[in-house]
Image 1 (cartoon, helix red, strand yellow):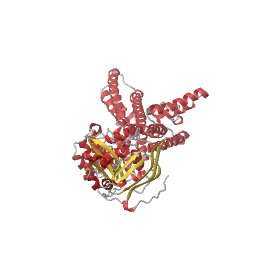
Image 2: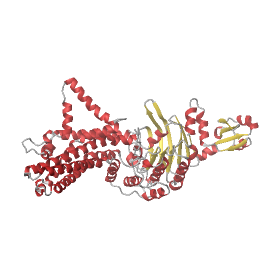
Image 3: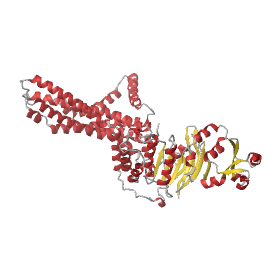
Image 4: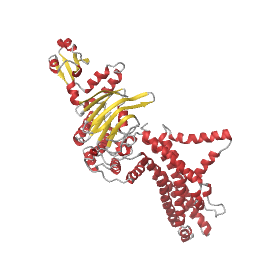
Length: 299
Length: 307
């Protein structure tokens, strides 16, 4: 069943178009990653889904209009918008008390048991915790909420690799099941490549690519060409070519290309490209985009 | 903007723990507790004032004991001894509560946007209306009740302190206790706090909360500047100061609520708004304006994100 259904979602800030007719369709049990450079409209799209901003176009989340039915919607939707937005004056125990007090679907025991696996003390104030620990605490609170949709907007920005890895491991092992749905935006694409079930590239308020990870894996292929076969490989019209340590790496879109897997395998080593490489290939070579696209993926 | 049906697809039934039954007052209760966790000045402010006043009072009493010597105070003097100081303590504590309330209200909806925690509050099923109302409850209900309780405790401690210090100095201690009708005084105080601080000041706090919800920065400036400009323009353009008089009346308390001057000069009596307090148009106009400010504050919080 459909969790998010958007048609022609549009949002303008003055003369800037943040969302330019976005269609979105997210089924239950999916983990969708929305990838895009800074200012692409990711956060605006998520804010519309969460009822934080008014919009034009059609949008239903869990069958509700998020802007006009926000209060009811928030019982079934939880989100982490940005890193470390927990109030700095709050104690860990107060955060648990408060969420348990206001949220009808909060399972305090679950949050407590998650916290025991961390170094976070109940009496600590949020301001005394490291950024990684604040994220752990927020995750503990959010995972203990029995929500149907979880939205994560840059949940791990600025965290070290250990916290990031742990974050997604916890999410997959302790939280996610086929009845839940997760939408995540991040610049740390490599962290989520094996987490996502669906992928979406967004650029300048428009969707550039939208596919499942199975499609992604069968459709895109990266070829590390044998030096003597570069010309033959180039003849097959790759989407992009780059040089890594003196070797040519060619990226192919098998859907719009006559080349098939076997033919390419004969020319070199084939593998599934990373999301980051595909992102750069699709967006990086558009005029004027290099700078922000590269920045978006490299972070 | 969208066509919508209120029917929720049945397939979206909760699959895990059933939603605990949650009354509408529960989010309100926890929101108010949250405010008290965050802004501890709400009770620390009046408590510190009371403590400072009490230490001053104790020193004063010790000095008085040396001066009294053998000369006995008559009843009127004894009454003055405590009564004027009671009034002073109540006035100081109420004044502190007013200042705390003003600064609390200015920061209430601004602070959460500045420290981005609004993103966390908005991720929980607490409506903007509940949030704003819980923040209004602090200056309108919690602070008056707190200052009442603290005033009461302060006056009781004063009575005990003066009894202990003046014991054996010749002052009639029993008279100290009987002279001040403790019960009456506290009822007057409670009435004053709930009517004037709770109802008459409502538009002031409403204005502050609205500015707090809107201000891009420096909410204090935005709260003070517009009234200041209006006063100035009125003075220059019409050479009148009606707006200033209006503001003054709002802060000082309703004119007709004051006791008539023929009454015995008793500070407590001036605190006691007469029954026609509730028929004063100023009260109801003020409450209506407060409601408008609050409505705007709720709408603003709906649209505003972190700054």
